[in-house]
Image 1: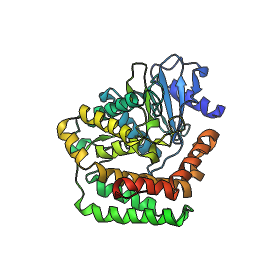
Image 2: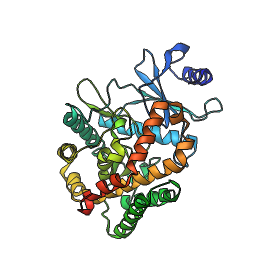
Image 3: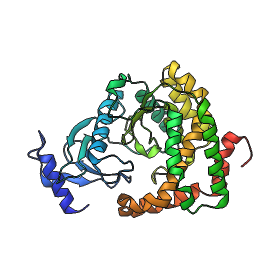
Image 4: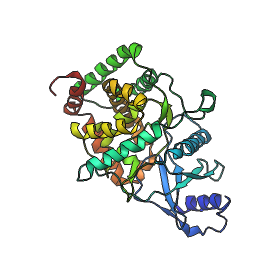
Length: 346
């Protein structure tokens, strides 16, 4: 991170109550914090972290992007599994994207291919259940968080926009054909899709966005895409290989028995009235979420990978993501995933 940005961040933070005497050297980049959308800096001696936006995937303005994230952290903190929001550094000429100050969580990434796999998965599931069972505010009080009144249909709208990049992603003919077949399925299924109870969701719930503390408790630390939507999409995104392979410190493909551990722990921790319909429509939402993610990867491959300066600055992350995306689009990988819901051999 360049010295000028550090100076501007220190200047903006020093103007906040309680930070006037903060030494310039108290801000230090966190190399262990991977991701393409934010820089993360530790505030020494405060147990706080600065989240500095660097890449916006949505068309939101910088102020709207920051305001929505701030609201998400503030609301989700009540779950006890999300870092508390400590301060907001508003967008300005000095700091165009602004920044958030949140509590630092001392922990490690989930270890999903080792001895703690099932315990870490269960901890992640309980963290999501704690978010999903928070009281949802009345309609008029849900802004600025997005609200998905019809999660299946609205996710399909996102998929349609991302699917435009399939033709530009350099895919093998078999991979392209399979994605278009899945898109046809989603279009046909939308009319009869369930309308699940809206809950606070993280949306980008891949395992790399969790930390496990010393007590074994999981914390969800990235609220960039929080919304009121379908819990089933969060569960699917946390366990599908298109998601579990994204973070280089976690990357793995979960076998069916591990997915069952995760989903069982979530169902136990969630309200029965919420869990029953989620599990009843599990497969349809896993299929939809896989399509949402694989078309996002098509957009990443065709466009965003050139725009996301954050990934380019982290050579290790960029190399890993490139390999992961290529692997996800292999015809064999796609066939193996589709076999889960087509009941055909891969």
